[in-house]
Image 1: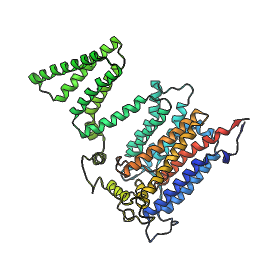
Image 2: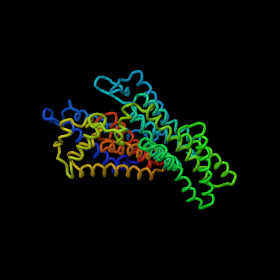
Image 3: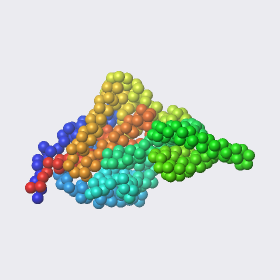
Image 4: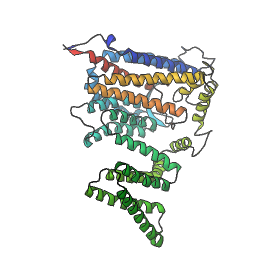
Length: 473
């Protein structure tokens, strides 16, 4: 029998207050973004801000209901919830309504629901359930594959709905996995992959290969300061490259890239065999890193031209400055930056924004809601919003660390990771530091699905946290 202490006393009210403040500020900015003199009442339910108020009230009701549910329910039914959400994602292909090229919505009259938003908290529950299993180790390869399957399956289904932004959100779970023991090498590889992807689009691949070849022996020498070994290794590569280059000139006349890549493979094979025989630490890892990086560099063009959609290519080109289309692909971001920049230090004042009032910024109440804050409230308002979000993230992390069960702690870090990813990418989009992938700003952006899903995500964790005071009688 379980004796439950007063739930009201056990709630983490700091997190709740931060949530309510962010929701309220978001609602006010939605009102400011779509305000017009014909519909000036903030309680006009024919306008977006009126509809958002209904969704906010419903979100508060959902939060209240979550606290009425036994906290053990969420752990015991993690897998059923996950499976139900997967089935909903699949059913969208049959019963869903296509909106803006994305078949990701259920539509019943004027009411629309996006299952991919709710899949986030379900995936978080499933991951927490799996990783909290007794004696579960992320370092085990089979376990790692199981983790990948949990968030890769919904990612693929969402990609098939043509919603790349929502699919990329699942990368946020890497931060949670890192807290639970994922090797930092995975994060390092992810960072290197991003750097190489960008570099391969901006500079000649031969230069990238040269940098890799110069850096790898330097790293090896730092780890093992054997000057003779370093000289022997560099000499071996130069000799290998020289012989292949000479043969190419005389007989084959292949592209120089193939010669360099062939030299790297032959040289790497020799080094791996030699280092294993002589038991030279780190050599194999460094060589495999060079091979991976070189191979990935040559696949970037294929990925960019054949995997990414045309509009995604255009957005990346715009972000990196490869192309400039201020009236087309770059219009949203340019107008957003103009709006934020025009706000200056203290802003133009509430309801005084011109970029937003005259609809210069598309999606100004959803994906680009932050530009309304920047224009009307300036640097001061933007800073306050960022501080509030940061306080929420830090509070969630703090509360996660005080949990008495692995399940609650893991789920808490998943909450922090998802919210942080949305926050960074959404604001990055509005100021031109991230490609436009169409994900909402938590608790701010207009939309019932996103507000309800983030509310469920957060308040399940708060209910789990309140359980720390429950004891067996």
